[in-house]
Image (cartoon, rainbow, N blue to C red; front, side, top):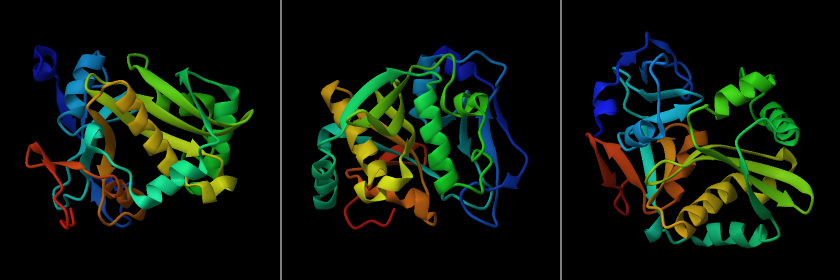
Length: 241
């Protein structure tokens, strides 16, 4: 670990409503937002199970719950399952285009449509452009917006960070009218391929949460490593996680 990461102040939040499991409270360990952040330090924190949301680097640290577990995929060993191969075949007519992070009117309009269809009860359903950028980007972070295009039509965007040892899947949003194409899964598969083509080691997938339907899908990508007991551990075949 670098000197900068060793000196980095960390703070524990007061209990607040859990974002993932209804009726539970959560505590969050986070870096000092007043301290400068760099890609080098962020990369090291990813390797220690942290996650980025906007400019905040954080990890859940809840007293009575250990369900939020950071996961990453060693991309060199990834072989798509049968249903994932179907998703790739179904979307072979989609073109992938990497764009620099920033406010793009077409991206933002698609994000608003996605949030209103999928998360209309959330605080980001009516996100302003500033809210949108504040959630997905940070001025110190190397981030790419991976477009999914069907001809001239934008159908999805996978927001991806570029840490030192891989890629980190930040957030994917897509046309809610194309649910049958499984564009969320396609977004992950596309980021895996991108990491493989660049000779990178990992795709960081954020937190897996056993009892959250929205987060449980991450174990469909194997082999997967879980951050447990202060180290990355490969999930064995048949192990529930």
